[in-house]
Structures are given as C-alpha cells and as structure tokens.
Image 1: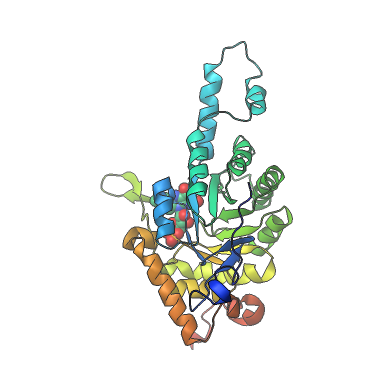
Image 2: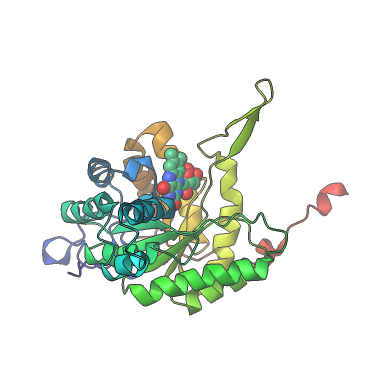
Length: 342
Ligand SMILES: Cc1cc2nc3c(=O)[nH]c(=O)nc-3n(C[C@H](O)[C@H](O)[C@H](O)COP(=O)(O)O)c2cc1C
C-alpha cells in the first residue's frame, strides 16, 4: 500500500494554515515528503527496528536501513540448493519461480515493521554487484512497503582487462534491471572513484534512477606493520572528507534531474547548509551519530533553523541551489592552486 507523506510547506502547518514551526524544514526527496532533509544513513544504527525508532524519535527526516548484502542472499540460495536432492537439476529456476521464499526473510520483516512503526520515509538498502538473486529481493522489499530503495553498488576493479566503460555499463545495467522490477523510487549509492561522474549520473537517470547518494565510504584497509597483518582502517570519517562530496553534488545536481543525497563527512549543520546551497536535496548522517549520539540531529536542525532565520529564509527552497555549478561554475572549475605559487 502506498504511503502518503506531507508535501513541503503544506501539511506541516497547524490549524488554520499557521506554520507550527517558525522555519519550515520540510523537503521532497525522490518525490517523498520529508519533515526535514536529515537522513540517518545505512549503518549499524539503522540495523534494527529499535534503531529506526530511535532515529526518528531523535528527529530524522528519513532512514536508510542497513544494507542487505548480495552475498547473504547468494549464500541463502546456495544453502537451499545444496539441501535439495540431485534429482532437482532445475533448482535455480524453481527457486526463481518460488519468488525467493528463502532467507534472509528477516530483512523483509525488518522493512515491514520499520514502515509500520514510523511516519517518515523508510529507504531499504540492497547491496548488489551482479545481475543475480537480489533482483527478486528488490521486488519483495517493495511488496512489504519500503518507500524507496537505495542500491549500494560497490565495484572493485581487480582485472586489468576490465575497462571503466564496461564497469559503468554493468553498473547502469544493474540499475535498469532494478527499475524494471520495482515502481518505488531508486537511489544509487556509489563511491567517489569514477572518472566522468556527470556522464555516469546522466546514464543512471536515463535508465530510471531517481536519486544518487554521493558517496559511499567503504571499509578501509590498513596494515599493522609490526604484526605484518591487515587491520581495519578508520571506521568513521573525518570532516575534511566532505570537500569532494560538496563539489560533486554542486556539479551533478546542476546537470541532471536526479535528487542528490550527501554522504561522507557530513558532521554538522554547516555541512548540511552547504549541501543544500550547492543544490543537494538531503544529507545523510553516520559517523557524527556514532561519535556524538543521536542528540546531534536536534542540534543540527536547530542550527539550520537559526541560520535560515539570520538569512531571512523561511523554507529550504528559498536557498537551495544558490551556489550550484549552474550558477557559479567558475568556482567549481578551479582545481589548481596556481596563484599560491606567486
Ligand atoms: C559501521 C558502519 C556500517 C555501515 N554499513 C553500511 C551499509 O550496510 N550499507 C551502506 O550503504 N553503507 C554503510 N555504511 C556507510 C555509511 O552509510 C556512510 O555512507 C559512510 O559512513 C559515510 O558517511 P559518514 O561520513 O557520515 O560516516 C556504514 C558505515 C559504518 C560506519
């Protein structure tokens, strides 16, 4: 059943049309009305119904659930297949026809319960890198009521024969496949390392993506040089990591009709304001919540309202995109510190 969210500046008003808050932080993201542009991003914080509830109580405008990983789906399929007798050579097509009545069903229950519990958009997250079983899950996730899906696509090129064009073709094809399966909005979450991001973004829009989450911050590899062993790198981001996100959002939001969500290095209200100023639509919070707790959501909202008040803005539309690539392209084009050498 389709859930209806209040549209910006509309139903967030109190009786007789009087605004219930001084500033109206409401916004639209991929057609979904949100009370504010802050999203709790896919992480351990959004891995349980309890976590989702706490995020929304803290004031999040939407939540992206922890990803369901393609490997988990594949493992469940393999397990079921190996449990089937040799006399079932068509096991795969049988499973397909059965619509994947398999583990990890908990994820579907998690999506369904989250949607029931809260009245802000719930965005399920699917990790995928091959045109495989996850596609069935996209459909099933829609069926249990997710408001949108974020596809967490993380290709790691390790084959010298695989060029960037083929890698991007595959990525675009995955998104096209998902689009054919579901009607709900699809956001694509990718990493930073694409050489021609505007071209890729335009292609993703063409095959039916509604939004882009820029960027995923992957598990970092590090080495213990005494133990001569690998160890995890910094799990949480540093604030400086936000700068490339900002530039990309300014450019991509100007050149495509995709809705853009910022991720990586959004640590405070100033980063959220900058995201909106360059034309982004929403900002995702993760590391800052791990470091400072969910209370920071209310602080960011309050600071955003205060800033809007100081600048005489009463809605997000009043300032969104003021400093986008379309309006201030020369600033974005500057990559070198030429003058600093003189
Ligand atoms: C503990 C942890 C778990 C995460 N799990 C996921 C995940 O399942 N799916 C996903 O798309 N991103 C995942 N992320 C990445 C975050 O959603 C986010 O994109 C990244 O941390 C950058 O944002 P930040 O700078 O606000 O931390 C995870 C991050 C952390 C720290």
